[in-house]
Image (cartoon, rainbow, N blue to C red):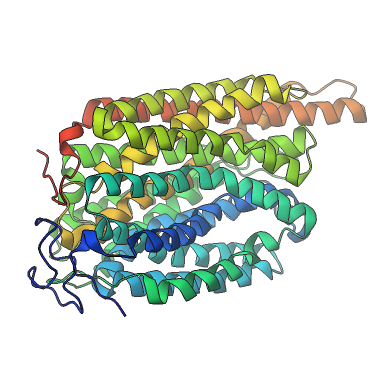
Length: 524
């Protein structure tokens, strides 16, 4: 097994791992690791599996709902059970990767992810499916930060690192839309359960290749775990999402049972905020914090993480409704729905290539701010949908613009979020990148699902015909759903616009702040 020390990340790349004082089986400089690009391909494939599963079930959701009897209010748990445990445990997963070994954590994450996927593929009711999705998130929280930390260790040359993070950024953004396509193909030609079972062969191949190729690395020094922090963060985020869900819960007559001002909703949200506040207090005082405040409080990194949270909330939360709109309103088949979602990926991949080339010339701030504005415009264009909208003239350009804007944000984010981070905190900082998007996606999905249900319910009640007939009622249901989706898109566009403002105000990094010659630059 190959070992690569991380102790020399802040030194010139010509220094060997032994010089840095970390145990290593070889003294090969990190930037000269001969199989780093092969390792990148393996890491990228595993990361794609994780990213795909955030959306691969979206297309299959109508079929899973009918098969397992999932209600409208609870449908978002198919997505949020995954993204919530993923985002909530990523910080702990990052620390485990740092201390236990990044390669070891990477492999264990893949194995657990495959087993959870097998459970989901054999789900017998909604609870078992939600449980499986939650377990996928748990093991994804080990796999994702280990992946990003391995990249930060393997690629120290600035040009190579830009290309590596370009690949990673394209996967982070494009994978979400690709999941919709894959979900459509599997649902239509096999069964919705294969949206989960397909992970098993991918995991087997990734493990077989990772064991001999991917090098091991770990942090040294203080390696104690912050279990109280992990419990407070995960429980606080879970209750916050649950509170959002309660606000949108409806009864058999499609009337809201609670709403935003009910004691039940406010109670869950209030307790969640208290727990999250306690988490901040604990992290500021404990000697081995799960999330060191030094990672967050640096202005540029903190701004990047906040922007990432807002982007995740706007994008993942809104894309949740695109597949529902295609199938439930326009009547698309699962595969047609997936293929018609592909322009988001096309836009992301195109923008990721351009952003990677421009990053050394322009720096991260203008590219990220521009991307946030463009993504918001794409989301606003999605508000023009109707019950009989033309895909080519309305939806297609909106999705392309949305994807292009997102691609411009992902690549710079992956770079500046790790700039100036000490080697000891590499896994934790990597986890914050993923956690910010996944937590944002969880909260955004729950929030926008509740917003959509509330808007659709109000629209249906206000437009109920005096003498309803079956055709009129079918049309009203379709119009109500569209009204709910449009409302969600408006909220999503607002979140993306705020993300652009956050980048403009807080991110101070320039092209000089991107690591050069393997050195980490500390920004003030």
